[in-house]
Length: 143
Image (cartoon, rainbow, N blue to C red; front, side, top):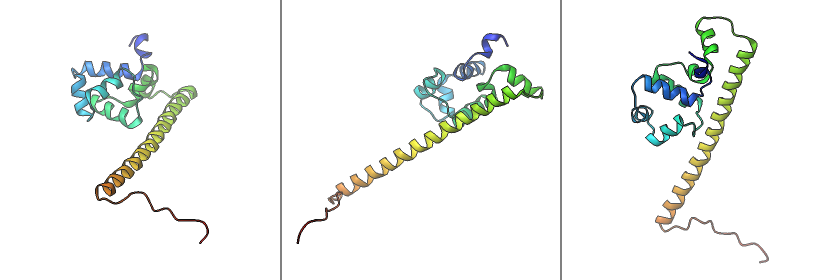
C-alpha cells in the first residue's frame, strides 16, 4: 500500500473495503441491522465506532478489526509474525483501552435510557389506569 493508505482513518478504510467487495451502503446497513443513515454516519466519521460495532463490520467485510484501526506497517508485522516494538504494542494497548472506555460509557448511557424508558412506561401505565402515579405526601407537622 502507498503512504496515503496507511494514514487513512477507520471510516475511510471501511468505505474502501466495502467498495472493493461491491457492497452498497444499503447492503452494509442491512447486514449490520442499522439504518442506511446510521451506517453512512459511520463511514463519514460522524459516529464513533465501538469495539463491538467495529468487530461486526470487520466480520461482514471479512477482514481483521485490527486492519481497520491501525497502520499497514503494524499489520504487516503481525501477519509476518515479526516481533512488534514496545511503541507499537503500547499504541495497540492504548487503542484497545480507549475502545473499552467508550464501550463502558455506552453501557452506562444505555442503562440510563433503559431506566428512563421503564419509568416512563410505568408512569403512562398507571396514568392510563386512572391511578395517580404521584405518591401521597406524608403530612408532617403538629397533630
